[in-house]
Image 1: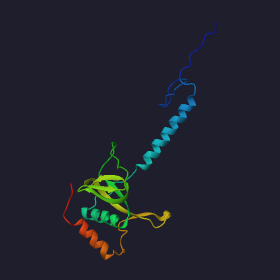
Image 2: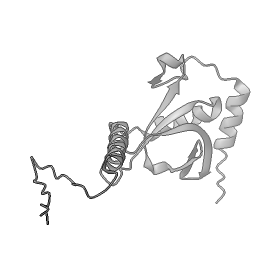
Image 3: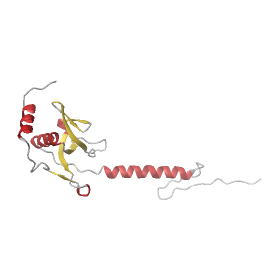
Length: 160
């Protein structure tokens, strides 16, 4: 009768080998590799900087111009995720206000007090896309549109 010896795995440089626990060991390694790649790519997307808090007047101006001219906005919120990182920006056109303190950006409802920074996205060319402070500079507003918007937003009536 032959005596079998049991294979023993020794830890090396803080690496624990799983041994022959599974028949298809390489399939598990590929799955772990894919998970690691996914986590690292998600982390690189989340390396956002916290932008300075803008004044209420500037935020109002950019939201108003986005509604009038159908301009795309990039909105950073005053919120952090569970790890204390800056949440991804909300991108879209301002559709209006749901009530006094809820803004609709694209399909996202945002509490007005949560807005930290708003930037208008200027599309010059796909390869030269930049975020600039005032893309509305130099645009002439027809008098009728300006009067209508002023009358609409300054009538003093709020529906709740």
